[in-house]
Image 1: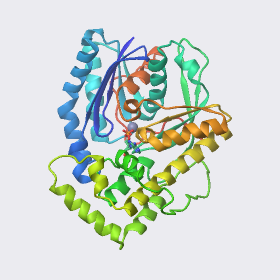
Image 2: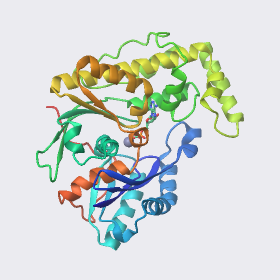
Image 3: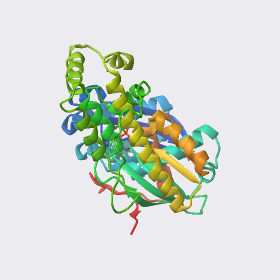
Length: 379
Ligand code: KG4
Ligand code: ZN
């Protein structure tokens, strides 16, 4: 079954064609980074205007790269939430219009479910096997960690292999900032560029992760919840009123004087060893916390498999430390490829395939939801 996926929940206009939820025929992503970069974060109004400009050419390009015409598409899967409402509506309305004109079934997909399916899709692409769902390991604990979300799920798959259906149980989530948001805000504070995650990932390799003691993240209540705003404030206190603040101001002026994007080596040349140590210590604290709570969740849920997905799953230290933790605590850990970790439409098409198989069609009343929790939560 050929499924067209459409994703526009934040600042990426994306479309993909995926066969049988397993084989990516095309995966086109139009990034808006150059538009939002100067603001150090996504500007919702600019994002939706850009989606409007990009949605038609991006969907056309996905079909062209897949070598399929609209007539050959057998189902349309579109992100219905959570996300920026103006952005979501662009992809959603275009998906509905296509479904109506082409007389094809439509399914609405939760963006978070898409991130979880990115792991299955990646495993299927790697193995080129039909049994990817069963072999990936269920039930499992999945950490979705991105710019908008940091959530731990227990994921189960219903036994029917012909039409597997998934259920999601929220074990914990961030009470304030998402981990990716913290990366982006710290990078903004230090004038390192946008998005902050990939830049900090590269710079941190040149700093001492023990250079600053930023403390441990402690909270009362659910031990599987997250909180990153305190860590972000701890970084702020190490910068405010110190030479690091004037260094950041100088970097800001330097960045403004440039025409194009600086390379990470050029940014590093503008950073003192102390800044690099701070960045490395911040990343260390985030990674340590994400792993510690995920391992606790896997132990509590008694599962032998962990999935990690979302933009922050690209982080090289996180991948390295998760592999070590998996050996130490005896579980298997799976990540999507880097391209499938960040926002994309192949993951939406893959999740859509199972819904289409199960006949969970949407009608034209399908609408966008800024807030759209996936699954039930712990009592
Ligand atoms: O999944 P995604 O593309 O969009 C959301 O659903 O939010 O994630 C984007 C987030 C940004 O906050 C970005 O800074 C972060 O993922 N990110 C990273 C890395 N690559 C992207 N964070 C840490 N290390 C990375 N290598
Ligand atoms: Zn996302």
